[in-house]
Length: 208
Image 1 (cartoon, helix red, strand yellow):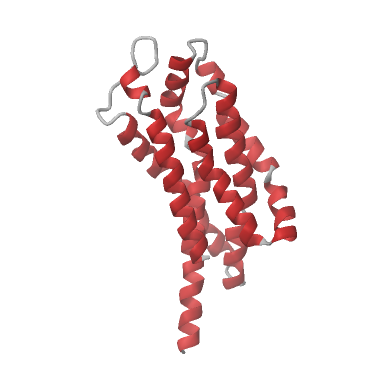
Image 2: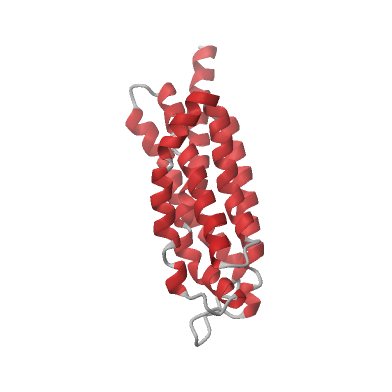
């Protein structure tokens, strides 16, 4: 009975850990919610940057994330799922931190979109496969439980980003971009997100 209980705790702990990791991975969609802040920030650095230039970040991230999915399987076969997952979540967590040091649009694309996408591809499937080992007859349930995190991630972190960058809920200026006092907090937001993702995904890995 005791062994059975421990196995059950481990099984549901794996679901929680997978959900936490996907809470971070789901933030591939977060750019759509914070694009106004990030575009305004880049516009202040370079007035030539507009919403037309940053619009492709999300679709590029989504395409690259799917293209890198096979890389996760290949790397896991070579170095193991633990190391592959660790590299993946590290890339995802590093993306906004690296982006906070970007001074040009292309630096932002490389640091945010590409870096996060590589991490997404490496890490996405591993928590689900780990959960399947504990729920071999309930794979749909296990997958669905973990993917809840994918949807909740952008929702929660959008609220947090708003509180950091724009706590007063100010609107953009007449030109469509946010004022300097708001864009001045974008770096802080990006670094907070990166550190938060690292902690959350780290705890999730332990639970797996």
